[in-house]
Length: 178
Image 1 (cartoon, rainbow, N blue to C red):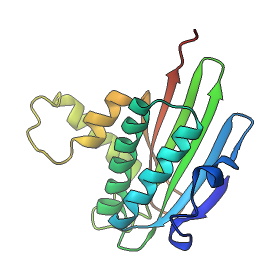
Image 2 (image 1 turned 90 degrees about the vertical axis):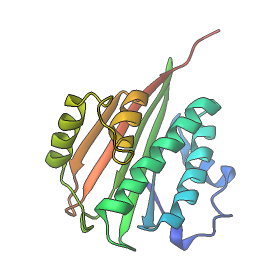
Image 3 (image 1 turned 135 degrees about the vertical axis):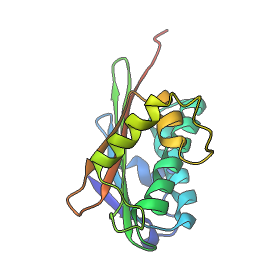
Image 4 (image 1 turned 180 degrees about the vertical axis):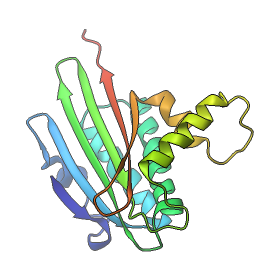
């Protein structure tokens, strides 16, 4: 899997042509390492838009995945990692005969003031699902469970080897044949 540390490259370097070189045999696997800083959110969104363009996704799905990566990234920065810790955004995309399979993960370092482990996240998911969201009146804390779960096939949590949390989503987007 190709790794790019976005703090070490000029944003002008990561272009459609540059990222296209990593799209091989109808598959793209790439990781972006980035400092836990909200200023990097724009670069992750821009890079994801280019990747999804390479994968031939329409603008509706591109925008949905930008929303998803924002939510995953913001949670990693706000809760899971101290300032300037190194987070990881992993993208795996595979074009298949009847659609496109996507797997996106964001991994934090687990050293943030409100860092959680995968079991805590599963418990939190269970608690929020039991409230049926309609009765959940807080503006904060809705995105991951309410928005993302409606857009993807699977939302999952794993503990990373470096003590952090990996939050991932999987989605297969069917492509209608003419």
